[in-house]
Image 1: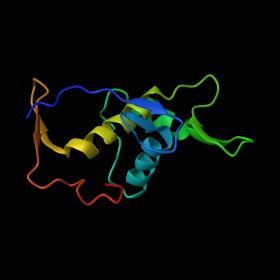
Image 2 (image 1 turned 45 degrees about the vertical axis):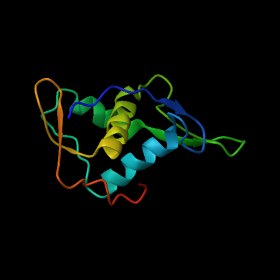
Image 3 (image 1 turned 180 degrees about the vertical axis):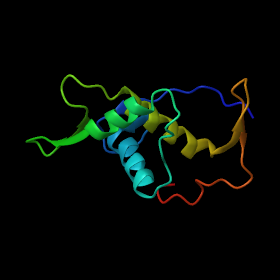
Length: 120
C-alpha cells in the first residue's frame, strides 16, 4: 500500500480543519507518547543527538493575550521537533506500518495500534 504525499499547514489555531493543524495538537501528541514510553529516540539514528537537544530546548510560552505558543528559544532550531510531530501525525492517520520497503511503500499492520488512541 503506497501512501501518496499530502500537505498540511501548521497553525496557531484551536482546531484541525481542512489540512490546517494547530501546532499545540502536534506537540501535545508527542508529549503524551514520550510520557507513555511509546516514543523513543534510537541512539543509532544519525541525528539522535540533535533531535534530543531540540526536544529539551523546545518550550511553550504564554503571551499577555493568553495565547500559548510553542517554539525553540531565540537562535535555536525546532525543525526536527516539528518533523517528528508531523511523522507522528501521519502515522495516526494511516496506522503504524509493519515495515517500510526500499521504495518507501508502507505495509500496514493487521491491527492498527493507533485505533485506540484517545484523540482519534
